[in-house]
Image 1: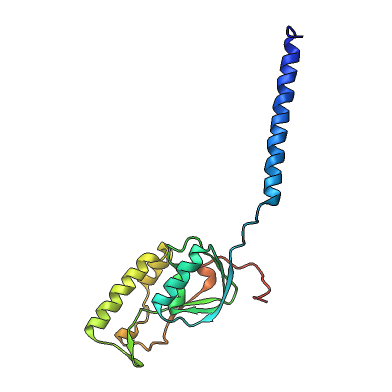
Image 2: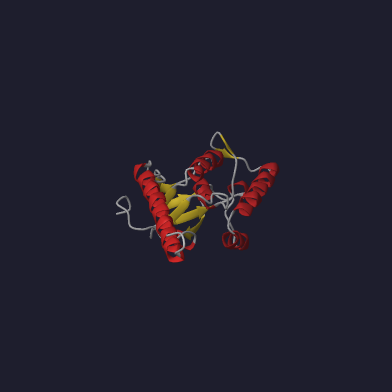
Length: 179
């Protein structure tokens, strides 16, 4: 029996097949009993007028860490738009047909009055420049080429440059919340 090389080739192939079968069986059993990966959260943002930039930044950092999927419906204005920052790469954002993003330069407000001092204008411009640096190149280049309203420089605080969401984000799949 030891002198037949065909036997040993066939035996080796059978042994290898058995080993692969055993490994695959163990792997499939472990996978079948493993805890499923939790689905990333899906967040729907509808008609968000914005607010405090720091609060929105922290909110989007948490959504980014969770790998969230964010669906925009209606208006996303002011601080809401920082979702577009390049650093939030783990957020899968999309916009439905009616989504509009509103942009204005940042401003400082105290007791309902807008600070329009020279230092406030300078600070607003510095913050706007920093914000632009965080946006994707095409959007940054576009916003640099147009007039973006600035309450610190005399515009009313509710005046914004409006851009359709479909220019900035992929289209959202149809969802129950969007219907």
